[in-house]
Structures are given as structure tokens and as C-alpha cells.
Amino acid sequence: MNISEFIYSLFGDYGDAGVLFCVFLIFLIDALIFPALPEIFFILGYDYNPTPVFGCLLILMAVLAELAGIFSLYFVVKRISIPRKIAGIVEKYVGFLLVSDERVMLINRVAPMIPFAGAFIAIIDAWDPKKCAAYIVLGCVLKYGLILLASSFFYSYFSGDMALKVTMSLVIFIVIVSLAASYRRKKKAGIER
Image (cartoon, rainbow, N blue to C red):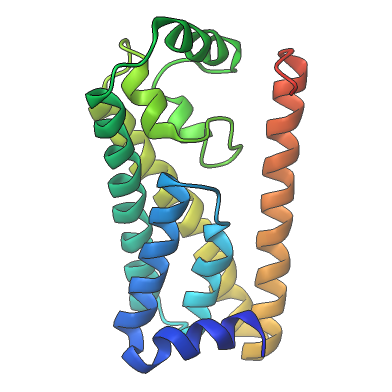
């Protein structure tokens, strides 16, 4: 049984709503707790129902889950007292990045430089949470819209199984390039772990 069959067995009985809920949960976990490779699950969700309307619903779920996860973490961090030393380290880290204002949320969709983005938004006082939210939405729509367009293209020229394999290969390539760009930027800035 491959992963898409496993997911469909969990949520497929609930139809489109179950798949949308699964995608929402994966994106929420990715934004709140740990990287969950939501791009893969986004494509698996689209494979369940490769139609433009369902693709738009998947993008909506991605946006809602990202915002819910990031701003849940934001409110938790705002409620607790972060030591000034940690806040200083966070601000210094962001200062090393290519962009050090709210626009980093847009770049973070392509090259993940900031894990636990909600905590960063809460700690860096100079950032406007509304601007961050706007960049998160824009980044999700652009990134997952492009993935959806590529996937739609592959579905129109290949069989469903082959289209999924080609799209998954493309997404894995995008994830690897994103991680490599993130690592390279960190190394260049002297932030290597």
C-alpha cells in the first residue's frame, strides 16, 4: 500500500471533505509543531480529485491552516515571557537573512529559513502581524497555485498514476532545492549548526 492509498483509507471514506480535512491537519502540524512536508500531501490531495475547483479548495485549506498554525503559535509566544537573550538571538538571526522584515514570510514559502514562524512574528517587535499574514497568504497562493498548475498540466498529458509520479518528483525536487537554498544562505551568513 502506498502513502496515498493509506491516506485515502483514513480519510477517503469521507470523500472530498475528508481529504480537505487531512490536508488542513498536515498544514496545521507543519506550521505549529514540526516540518511535515505539506507539499507532498497537497499533491496527494489533488490526486484524489484532480479538478480545478478541488484544487482551489486545497489552496484555501493550505492558507487557512498556515494562518491558524502560525498565529496560534504567535499567541502562545506572546502570552509567555521570552527571555531577552533569546529575543536578541532571534533578531540577530533574522538580521542575517536576505530580507529581514515581514517579507521574509513570503521568501519562507520558497526557501524555508524560519521554522516556527509564529514565534518569530511574536518576538520581533518591529514586524507587523497583519503584514506577515498578508505575505503568508500571498506566498501560499503563489507556491501552491504554481504546484497546482504544474500538476494540472501533468494530469492533462499523462495518465493519473503517471501524472502523480511526475508531480511528486517535481515537488520533491522543489523541496530539495528549497532546503539547499536555505542551507546555502545559512552557511553564507555564518549560521551553520
